[in-house]
Structures are given as C-alpha cells and as structure tokens.
Length: 51
Image (cartoon, rainbow, N blue to C red; front, side, top):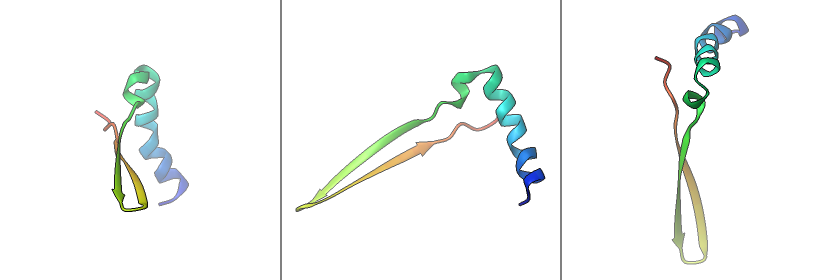
C-alpha cells in the first residue's frame, strides 16, 4: 500500500470523525489472568466501522 492508497482509505473515516467525534471512540475491555506469580493483561479493542 502506498501513501495515496492509505490516504484514500483514511479520508472517509476522518470526515466521519469530524462530523461525529463520538464515532471515533473505541472501548477497551482489559482482561487480567494470574498463573501463580506470573500476571498478564490483554486489552481487546472494538474499532468503529465507517458507515
């Protein structure tokens, strides 16, 4: 993918976010697991899809 292709993909998303800033928000759901002394944390992301 070159710069022009990337810009073509981003333009409609950026325009939507300018019109509706709430559409740019994502929610994260952290998950923490403990296995003895080892701890891990993983955050899942839900991305907004352009309409």
